[in-house]
Image (cartoon, rainbow, N blue to C red; front, top):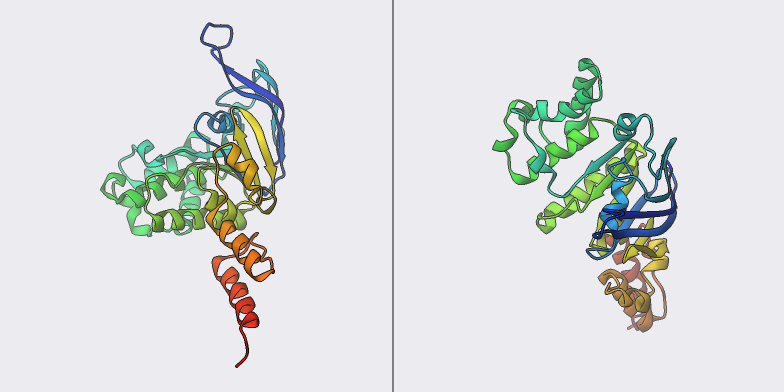
Length: 290
């Protein structure tokens, strides 16, 4: 599903002394099937932006389009429930939302709420459990008997069981150790590719944006500050520093490597292993022959 923001402004507590403009005149387009990273410091408007995607908030001004759904000032889509079945949101610490007595019932809750037949729900659960890295024998256990990482995967499975076309990830690796962060992000990226999802990732991790996203939007004080492919945005050191963001460490290293050897190494959509192989080849070629 395509996503378009057209001159969107959102004001909390509008027409009161406490009115606060969270985002202002925001415009961008996300093509269907893209993996987009939204980056910015606390207060930049990231959370307000993604709350528009499933109608949690409605624009104060402008228009948001998600597929065939339109959200404009004072007007919600007639089929708000259908919109929310199309846009799945994984919030920070999604495991805090678990409440059913078994893992299977918790995963089934979302699709049941959207009227999916029982046989179809069972089929989806069988499909999703291995995709999120959980063994089938956990389905009859209480989610509260699982490890923190397993609980998070159960919560994610519940979102995926609704079969959304858009997956919104709000700091999905918060509180995980480095290995857990990598495992969860690799899982999301694989699901993104396999299911053709439009994926929107809100993150503070510039490294994740480099590794997974094909487009980046940087927010600052409620406005769009920069936008483009990671390889276009992350080389602009001075512009990033102006909003207290750093160039990702991998990009810094490759810039230093290029300065030393005079040969650039493209980093977009490459794994660390592929980049290392490129570096190794250049270094070997530059070494003096005995």
